[in-house]
Length: 247
Image 1 (cartoon, helix red, strand yellow):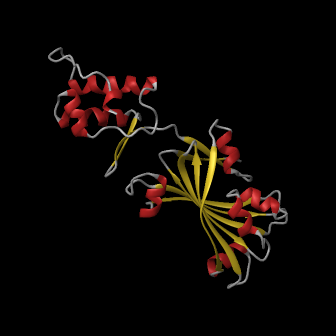
Image 2: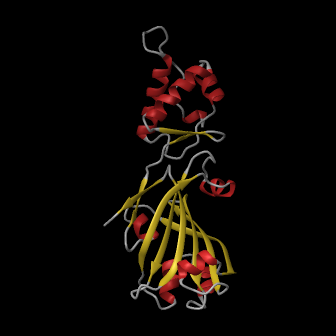
Image 3: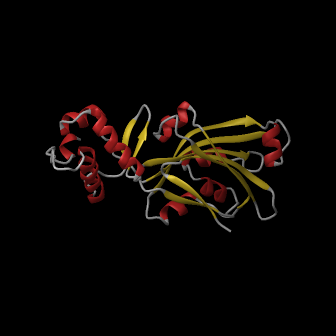
């Protein structure tokens, strides 16, 4: 990484603060693509040794770059070149893969867990099923250009979709699994939006700090008759995704 950094020569005693010179040089490297989005930057100590300055000078330069939105500083993890924030539209027909492809990114999904659970009171109300009836729980990691952007927690009634576990085991796409189950189209009935701190596991999966909030949506999807077919809870890496509410 040090080899990708600007040359260490600085103009000293010329009236331009050293931290400004360092920030400008790094900014030029980021703008030119030599430091690509998502790149983890060297530590303050490595930077200080490279530029032959003290850590306070490096800290001031990084704070300036962070204020410009060029880098993000995550407590306990270090500094990273900022990534482009993707829009994720929340409309009546929201599909992750379609939304990501429209922004010239390659979507992918990794199924992390599939299990059958009995419906509790919350699931009974959300999915209009009796308490204790079998519900499929699926947890999925969503990626854009191989970078994790969201974690999805999905709940579907097994009595209506008896092959849903098998289908999701072969293909992590919820849309494809529902289509193969005889439901080619469904729409959002309602969506709640909030924010919270991620769990330890969520922060690890999303490759972000635990002190950085995640955006959270809770949505109920329904068929043409208004019958609930899925409860979906998703948490998004706020550094990479922003929610766009559509009419």
